[in-house]
Length: 190
Image (cartoon, rainbow, N blue to C red; front, side):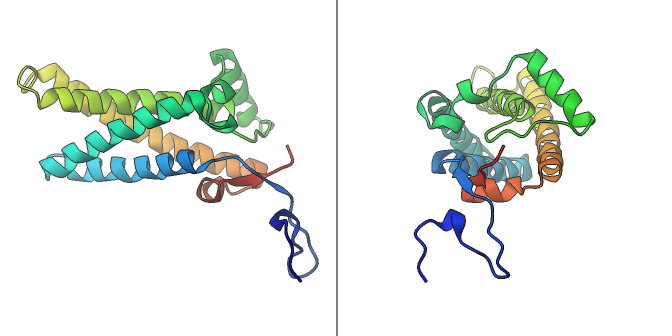
C-alpha cells in the first residue's frame, strides 16, 4: 500500500506516529552542522596547524554571514524575529525549566533563541580577533590574542550549555531534538 503523506503512516503494531511539521530548513541545518564541524576543526588545529585553523575561521565567517542574512529573509523558524525574546521572557522560561513546567515551542524556545544570539556573537568575536591577529597591524598585540582565546573558550562553554539544554528539552518534551536538526522535522502538537 502506498501512502502519500508520510506524517500519517501506521507503524508496525498499529500505532500511528504523531504528525510532524517541517521546522528546520536545509539552510539552518547545513549552517548548524557546518558550524559544529568547523568549530571543532578550528579548536583541534589551534596552535598546531595554522593554515587549517585559519581556513576554518574564514569558512566560519562565511557561514555566519549567510546565517545573518537568512535570519532576516529566511523561512519562518529561521528568522530572528521568530526566536529572539526579551531578557525577561528568557529568564521566566528558564525558571519554568527548573520547575519542569517549561512550555514546548515548535521553533527555538526563548533560552535556545538567546543561545543562538550569544553563540553567534562569541564565535564572531573569536573569528574576528583571529583574523585581526594575523594582520600586520595587530599581529602580536597581546589583548587581541587574549580576546581571541577568551571568546573561543567562552564559545566552547556555550556549546556545552547548548548541548545540555538540548538534552534537557528533549527529555522534558519527549522528543529527539538532535534528530529534528538532522531531518528538519518536529512533532506537530504543541
